[in-house]
Length: 362
Image (tube, rainbow, N blue to C red):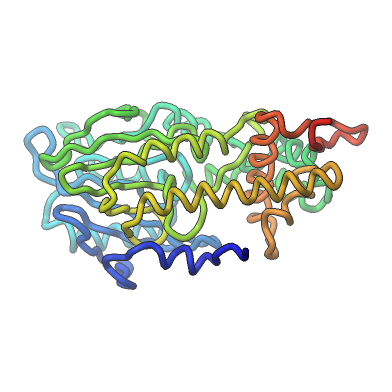
């Protein structure tokens, strides 16, 4: 039977706002006290959704920001328009960041500094693992480029000299998008209840996509700010990086999705990419089936002959990829191979050429 297309899968979800999107510098209220911001990104994934939550903190009226966009002048200009037109003259009280990827944390330092005073600091709220990863990344690299990343990709089959040189040259990729993070923060952790605007938002930790991703669920509103853990149309990037070369992030990600199963069927999901939707349980099922299908295809390819991660990329991705996309695809390819390896369904062997290849157990 032919598997359903992405459009057919998406049709099983419901979009309460239809095709309506916030225009640059404007907001749309999606639930009481919850406003949607959409900002452009200069990548193939060309936008990110950010959220404003009406809040009261330490007796002050204002707003909590959830996620920030990358550090770029265009995003700062959009934020300034929002400050002028959408905050009802009230300040930003705190900045919550779901995880350390540049499009989520890039402007956290700027926002916190922009809205801090000696009497009233605007604090960053984030998990400890993602805070410290971002701190390291903004001063060096965390697997997005440089010699370590090039050596890692080379060991998994990417041998083209020009491509490897471009990867080495990207040692400054992360700090170019996240030039710094605030020196101090408040820690978010799984199960933590955060009161925002008189309502309780519960943190739900997720793993596999980022070190310690934090989604936020409000039972009163039946709203889930899902970050990148549950997206309506695309599948979340789940990659192995050179700093943790023997990790099993796909297993972590699939296990994390189960944490969202107890939420009500009518939950309104506010994703970081795509449109707000209902159909959370359907989407979780789709994501699980998607990865099981990809794993079966990778296993079958390795049964025909041993595969490196680079050789498995076209098994997983059937469209042309530029180098930027290929680095993400490589990380995903290693993640799928590693899940099968950790399950004992594949063996990993390193050949005389220094490349890891995977084959079925004898």
